[in-house]
Image (cartoon, rainbow, N blue to C red):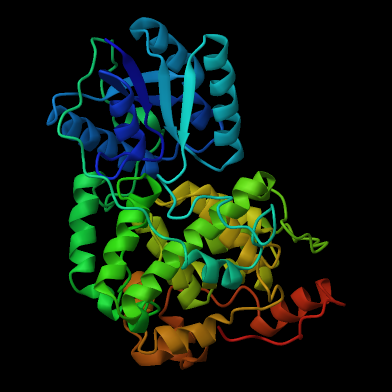
Length: 464
């Protein structure tokens, strides 16, 4: 009987999975394979929160495959070596894989292709698995990538979205050795957050159905409400491929209205960052648009930022939310990133690394390129804008409920006064175990603008 390998990477699902369906069409039997890649750990990206979530995803995927007569085959080691071994063991003639955009993934794909060609086997890479519109499908000219989101989004919205694929009814798997499913503790050192969401396609689809069933209609008006927590929280499920961005786009579009349109726009941002990284993989570690920055190296300030002890309650609340939940509200991500890169004037890579250490949805394309966007070294059209945490607090946490939730030292401070504790009466201030601001906003802003003096951007504090 003919055999094909379905190599799962960032597409841990059975619904709307072109990789799995193509492998089933190509052969009588399929090896649904996941390789616990030692290279991920060696590179420092096997962190507890994502490892725990991944373990849930693999267990859920195995259960879905067993319900269809199959199972997940797990191996540990170098991906290319393990695929080669299984291809030899089973006589597989094809390997099916979802396209990815990071430099690591591109190198892996190239090595895999060479190995298979040497053994007269075929690698089939599928584009529309983790993207809605694949990288390269839209270009500003005959080649390259879009460097500005708005013109990209105009074209993105005109691309017909393919029909989602149903989950297969059966998945026949040949006799092949498999290691047991790994636990989160086996995938990474350290303890994950105690309040992580449960991973896996089943949970992702349940949450997506709940989101599309009502809250999405209010997304346009409430997505920046920090205390309201009115975003979808589906990003971890998209990151691990438990949910299909194609299917979500079609379902949200069917709901219609301003909320759904705003949500779909966020899915377009995912594709925008991916098409940029696909063409410029070095942007994960190098400035996309160098600004000749001479970043400050101040470990005390960086430690205060990481620990949520900067003296600016909104910044600290967002950082503590991430430390506790492995997730941060998108508005909080903008505020904390701008504070680090433009008020403290610290290299964006320091912040990006910390986010990747904690976020369950930590994604190279979204994380690195959004950090660059905020730092002004990326695809932003306003590279010198500074996001004022006090303005943000007034606009998106006016009553201070978000801050009181995450900064318990300030829980007794009522109303908007919680955002400026340094202005409280002296006798109240003395009772608070909360630091003074590590830097004045005006001082930080002026230092940043001096560092980028001569640029065309106005030397003002923008309010986003």
